[in-house]
Length: 309
Image 1: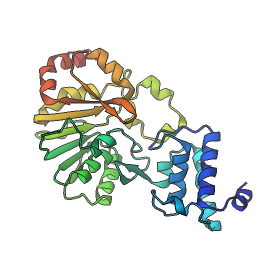
Image 2 (image 1 turned 90 degrees about the vertical axis):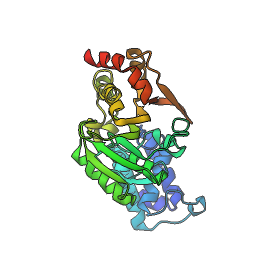
Image 3 (image 1 turned 135 degrees about the horizontal axis):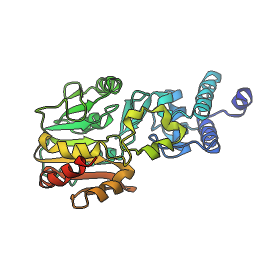
Image 4 (image 1 turned 180 degrees about the horizontal axis):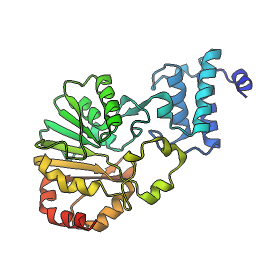
C-alpha cells in the first residue's frame, strides 16, 4: 500500500486530506486536543515535516520528498492501527496557544479551561489581584504553566500525586522557560501543601465514572487511568477539593474545577451550593467557579455529603 500511495500523493495538502480520510473511514475517536479527523491529520503532517502548526495555506501545494512521505504514512498507519492519540504519536500538544510536551505519563492537554486562561478568568477574577495560583492535579502541567505564561506576575504551583506526571510537568516548565515562577510539587490533593495559600486554585481532577471508564474508546487506554477514574459518580476527588480548598484560598480567592459529565451528579448532591457553571464558546462544559466565601458558608453540607461516601 505504501508504494502505491507515495506515488499518487505529492503535496502537503494531499497528505493532510489522505490522513483525514483514513482517520474518518477507520471510525477513530477524536477528543484529545482535536475533535475531528482533519485537524488531527493537519497536526500530524505538519509535525512530521517540522513545520509550524499555523503554516500559511500558501504552502499547501509544496511537494514532499520520498522520505517525508514514508514518515507521514507510517504515522498515519500507527494512528489507525494502534488507536493512539496524535499528541502521543507526535510528542506534543497545543493548549491555550502554547505547545507542550505530551506522552503517556499524563493525559493529553485538552481542558476547556484553556479558554478561561486566555480571557483572564473573567468575570471571576475581575478586580482581584492574583499573586499566587495553584494547578491541582496538574498532569502535564499545561493549565498551571499556561496561567503563568499569560500572567507574567503570577507565581504558580503545580501539584500531582503521580511522579511520572510531575516529571513531564517539570520538562514542560523548562520547555516554556517559566522556572523562575512555576514549581511542581508532589501532593495527594492538598496533603502536601500544608500552609500554602493561593488567590486562585484551578483543578482538572479525575472525574470519569467507573461505568463511563469501562466504555471508553481505545484511544483512552493509552492514558493513565489515575488521571481519569473517579468512582461511581465521578466525584471522588471533586468533593474532597470542595471541602479542603477553603484552607488554601485567600479571603477573596476563587476555586475553578472541571467535572465534565459529573456536573449533574454534583448538582444533585449539593443543590444549594452556589456553583457558577462557566459558559464557553461551544457552551457549558462542566466547569464551575466558586468563591471561597461560598465554600465556607456551605462547608457543613459539603462535609455531610463526604461523610456518607
